[in-house]
Image (cartoon, rainbow, N blue to C red; front, side, top):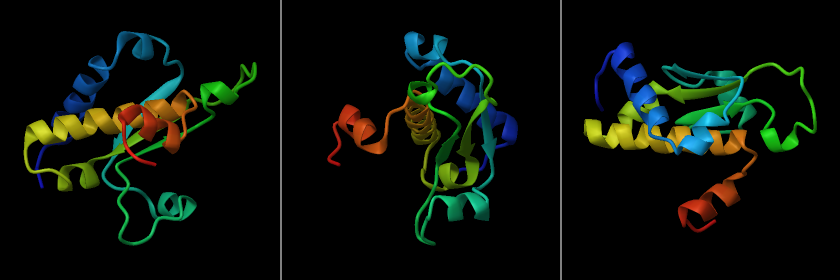
Length: 126
């Protein structure tokens, strides 16, 4: 587990966002990218997570692909979870890579991709 301040963690999120492909970054609208220490019990319950499952990030909102012309919607929210992310790595380089991957994954949900599509893009078996 890495120990870092909230400011340091936010900086790593900013670096990850800045390193996303420009075309994806530039098309993100009305999305708050936040971090919390850990998922809430309500978030875990809503996602039906078992006690042994970890949640690194969460997208909450209406994916762009499902908006069908809606113009008055609340901001979408992407939350990265500092505790699980810092506990899942041993080095700062690993943490930066994990934050980038988690942010990319949640932004893929914003664009409407499901887990199967994301895994296919990553070359992972579904």
